[in-house]
Length: 168
Image (cartoon, rainbow, N blue to C red; front, side):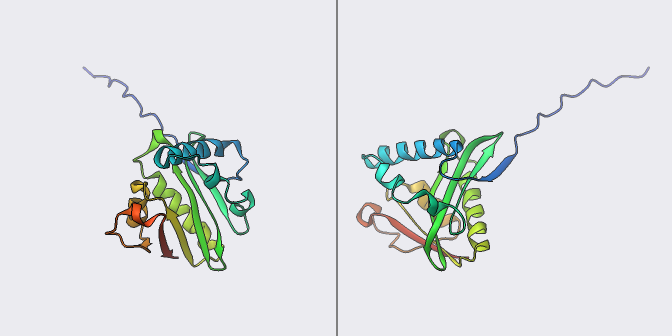
């Protein structure tokens, strides 16, 4: 007697993460800006408009900058940008992971993609600051090889913005 094997359920394909380069006015950037504004105002008790509108949109566009999103199934789940800080230095800004997609290594992927792009554009160094009430960001930058330009043993609230750098 021959037995017929039961068909095994096939695993469903996982959505692929895709990297897209966009401009600030792309509608897919809106969740990034909305959640960053909420994070900043929740953590710092003030409107985030000043910080989010500090730089003109063209600073985050080629040839001197870049803005990218990670899409999961076509939806933005993480993103970030850089702008020219000086002739040899790019400044990371707006590193974001959607609140429903954290703890998946997406911010690390964004940072890696931004570093690659900056190196391709001829930058030799990355500079950034993060707020003293953003321990997740501080941990990300320390874990990805950034050198803190502040006393890491000091109370972050006594320092203000926490600067980091990394050679490319």
